[in-house]
Image (cartoon, rainbow over all chains, first blue to last red; front, top):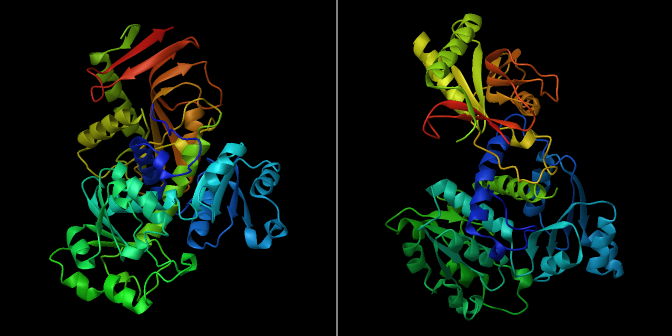
Length: 308
Length: 179
């Protein structure tokens, strides 16, 4: 009997290949459901989920919220800016207070790496990591790999390059783990200042020339430049970054093959990719968003289904 | 496989044929009727019935679907096993159609209850009927009865009725296994 091996979703690092495949198979069902006139199933009707966001988010939060509503869960939303956190309450106290109102599952985003792991050790509810600092963003990696599987048939044997700010990116780390577990080859590409030292130890290739990387890959995942996490200047100017690491139509046309362009959003049009590329048929940015709801439904359904 | 065989090759085929003719008698040319198999075990029966009726009526236009009920079960988080969904194939609307739900064994009726819920999420059928290969009588937890029955069986609660298909094991055969 198939079974999801984890009680929480803290990071892709903890998952097995079978877990990821199980999420994908389950997500196929949910994708069919969210495309029919009645987009709801009653599975999680006796579950209450708290969405606790200590960092800003539009897409991830709406995606989780829609996923929860389509599974018929009850939800409470909490954002740090309008809460007692600003009065000095600790993370555990905040969450324990919410849990004492009988909450079964917590979806949390937090600026500190490892915040979800810490929380999982101290509270009873099941936890889903919606991004912890520069560490992991597991549901994003799952929806990215699911979108690649949907577009190219499978992930195994595919070549994926992740371009941009690898140093500050939780999306990059989760994607590397997820794609490698599924048998893809991964390369990272960006200016030397934005590539972490020793990243080769994860088994990824490193390339600083964008054209070489694009020529090598089947899929290019373009990360956003996270200016809010950059406390110092890592490159001289956005314009120079865009000239060296931005994908435009000219660059795509000069390749002798078609590649798939992905972006976890929000897109800085004209920086990582130009509008022409973002709106082209190569881009699957909006498919990623649609698949985000289905994969998050799958994750929550599989986690919630474990508890007797 | 040990246990008592209650339905074997020849009888099995005759029973399937009889079920098909009963359906044709009631539904004519199937212009307003759709056959829906229930995942995971009912689809082998529904595929056979769909193929046989299409053959008898010489048509390829009978609406056919396979419904997964995992998300509608009443034992989610209440059993020990994780409920994994199966593939769902419903590419038509059930609105104003006559629906024949098809499953292999009818026991407590809980699966059919879930299937009725799942079905209404695809529209409002004009009528829903139930066809089962084996009806385990006197064991229902819910007021649900079949309209077409391959074979009715009286069995004890600790018995298991196992339907095997050529598609998944060697032969078409139904056993009762007593624990």
